[in-house]
Image (cartoon, rainbow, N blue to C red; front, side):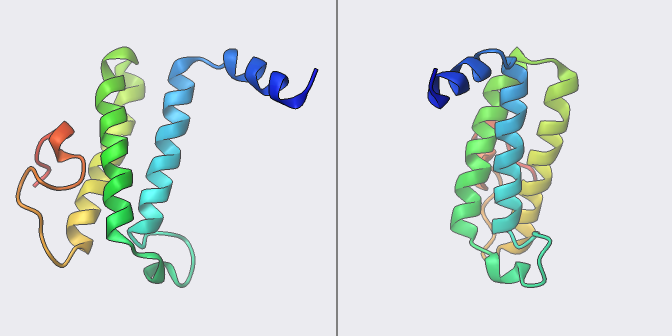
Length: 112
């Protein structure tokens, strides 16, 4: 067997909720870095609000769509992390979005 077949087999054994959580955490981490919240000394140099907006919106779509399919114990921390990122985006942006127009708010509603 080749490595690709082994990877396909491995992912086929992973529960959907675990995949959803893993992808969500990756999106959250990337968005945090793009908001300048990384662990490095020059984290502020990483700020890219356009990229952060895209990542947060993708995360909001995933979390909103997945929440009814996964238990509340899995969905709640994802929603909390998403909300924290949405609020951090508002704090970081020098040009405020209208309520309901921030990243992901078309899926979550306004976070203001």
